[in-house]
Image (cartoon, rainbow, N blue to C red):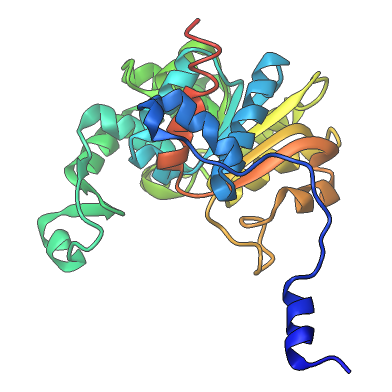
Length: 332
């Protein structure tokens, strides 16, 4: 009869099989500080560092195989300094189509009219409200920026409306976005470079945010004003047909993530997919869904290279761009 200590020992010290694979190890700072080598070491670090390493590898394959790259990001990304990285990608034609939310459009334009300022996550909402300061996380935006935006945008809406009346042309959301880029005429703007390089920016929720507020007020004065959302969804979905390779790079989640993936479902799935977000899958929402769920719908191909990286895009995306679009494939 085995004694308790023998049973415990057998359970704790049981035999195992040897496994092949990447040895887990980190960067050795005895070799000095080499940022490229540090990032390279993420591949053997484990956890989300290794997921980021895989994401970089997949993006480099998208680029080297000349995949049509769909970039998606939510409005808070443009509130942050990531706006300048998105502008770089569009300015240098590194991506082919963008899907984003309304805040990302208006804030790109608003930043041309006035600066956003670093604040504090714990700032008093009551105090800020009294001062007319809006808060986006730890970023402060004086409300005067939105007043300037209204003056700028209402003139554009008037111009668009005149075309509708005289030419019978019904504008689409993506055309409004290009018009904003054209009129702002500022090289710091994502929308400006999208218009100049004819890279479509699609916003399936154009009536949200300050743009939606402006459309709401404009509609009171012009009851017959129309925006053709149906034409835009047709144009966007049609982008997926006939592609040699399709790659999706999505920061954040929600409507941005689903709009890109749903369009790729029409071609039976994307060839490459990289998600960066913090959403969880336990509630069944598409926001937190893993690539495996998208494969089940035909949004990503079964043999596609796909990864989800959990984390803050303001930290992860600059590293990814530095090790892909900017490093191996420099400015045009």
